[in-house]
Amino acid sequence: MNTTTNVPSGVNTHYDRNMLYKARPSLVHTMFSEVRDVPRNDTDKIRFRRYSLLVVDTDAIVEGVTPSLDELQITNIDATVQQYGRGFLITDKLMFTTLDPVLMEVSDILGENAGNTFDVLAREELHTTTNIQYASTATSNSEVTAAMKITKAEVMEAVRTLKNANTKKVTKMIDPSSGFNTSPVDAAFIGIVHPNTVYDLKLIPGFVRVEEYGQRKAFENEVGSLDEVRFLETTNAKVYTGAGDGGIDVYATLIMGDHFSAISRISGEALRNIIKGPGSAGTGDPFDQRQTSVWKGTFVATVLNDSFGISLRHAVSA
Image (tube, rainbow, N blue to C red; front, side, top):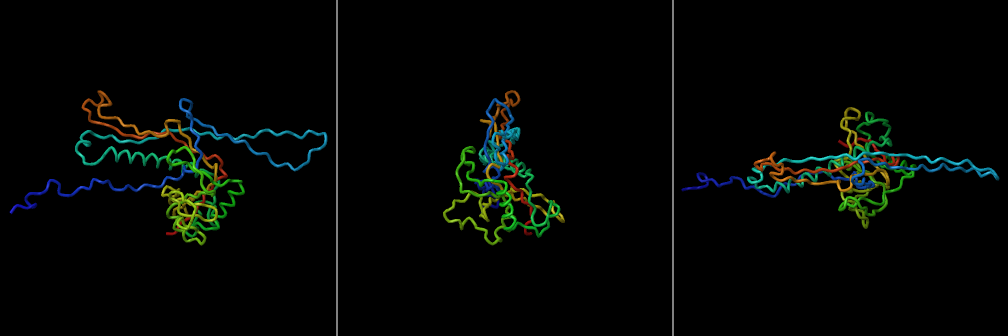
């Protein structure tokens, strides 16, 4: 009797051609920035300018005496747009011997990598703020102990600090469908937190989970609110690995208001997927053996108003 033992199938293991889901972080650090792009064929530099407000003078004007006049106080904030990119080289043999939709998968991977790159670049810039609040009695990352977790009092202190700096609540976000236009949102301060921090937030009395919001529309990746802060979760949240007391990780929860940051790109060059087919290199690829798929984009993130954001440093539950 002939069976599959002596006549095996052409493929011994069934291959599911549906690609497995790829774990990826939530990209939230640019959602509430101002977008100020640089015109193409102009420059790679952008300057933001702020005029300082006058100090209140409560002295009355003396009759017949001209009061002294004030000079304008100007603050310039400069940034330079940089190019970034990654890509793949794919052989012709791979394309005609594999069952996988290679180009489709490559495009998906490149798109995720571009978004993740810009999000991490923005995160690093936002945490350059000198407005740092340490949990409990700590005065530096190295003094943060395992017991110094995020609390309602810490969140309220951050809100108080922002309000004393005349920080306005966020009322708009970048439209994710266009990456440029903005959409109105309910006024609130915004917190960006790591999932390990969310664990502790949910244990705080008064924390309102998104499923309890009622009529309020939640942001994508929003987990809830505490006091006047709405929290968005991402594994891209800043962590200072091993920087705390005894080598514990120090988590940096970013709490910010409106006009805290901006992002800039070169108009028309924000993000491109460039595909070069086999033989496109001419005599450099005489046998049509190689093709490439890459992403290339321009980006810079800038803190506009240092006092409108706070990097809250704390520990998390083990």
